[in-house]
Length: 468
Image (cartoon, rainbow, N blue to C red; front, side, top):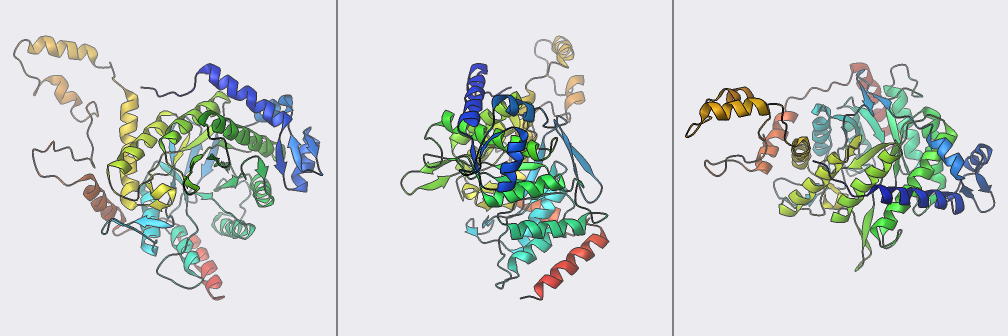
């Protein structure tokens, strides 16, 4: 089964218009160092207006140096090869809102939420990297609250670190943390961290994001662009034109990364939303995004670029049919797009909320999406023909050799979380099963973080707390 959005002609049309816009309009780049680097590389630079335009030939040359894979390392020594044909998960462990199981209403995150969701990420073998929203927890009302959440997060996982920061101060803190966790204290080229770098859409690389980009490439961090146009306000109120704008911003950022450090990993990423025209707010998860995410992955693959896609979530803050339908559709499109990395598992509340139960349910959606993509296998077709002939008219297949052979093979769909009772017996709901599974996975947890790393992290935060 294959879901596709763009025709070959439409892909080539977007690519041609992308090259024209990068060559004729370009970007505003608010950093003199980057302007000089771009000029030295052969770009057309207007230092007074802070604009960078990249000729088509140079753009092709820069994109040709993008790596087709890279190694993401973890502090326990495990490595993941991104671009090896497998699909890995990038997990987030907290958001401004937590969808509470007991009340079924959003509430602010607690330290237990951070810890439990970090454990869920650690125990999922498909999760290769983890990130955390920088948000305070309800357990502490002083200035240490957000720091304590970060400490709890770091002390409970060994995965690759996805660093999403919005300030130079936060970036510097992560560099300090990186030097604490790196085996020899050297973070550069360690493979332990990736860094998100935003675009101020449309077509502006701000001073803060320029600094992040310089730091990321200096350390050899894979770069994840955060490109989030809002159709109707910061991008055209048109799906195809917004897709074009996102492609322009992705390719320009990829080219800048290669100007700074040829061969530095870069992943194509696109997170558009829709402007809600009554109040001007952002609707992050609409059905338009199902189309956008698939189309963006098709564009990325046409360039031979690595790509990450969101696989969640839902506009709703409820455990209801809408959240289930939206989450499953997003997961199906993300998984089917063959993106190298998928993120957003468990996301709710219009990308502002998270739920431990929905993290596990999202994992179930992924297994279902993979089952559907496998389609119908003809591997045992000949044996099936023999079974039909053997049983003949009026026969049954309950004890048939092929039934016994394939009973637990995954040939026929089954699920550990879905209610598979068919109504014949009493059975807990998917939400009840997920809640019980969360409790099971987080009980009696022993952190795998090496003892010496835990000691350095605890000492670092202990010293920070003294200032409050």
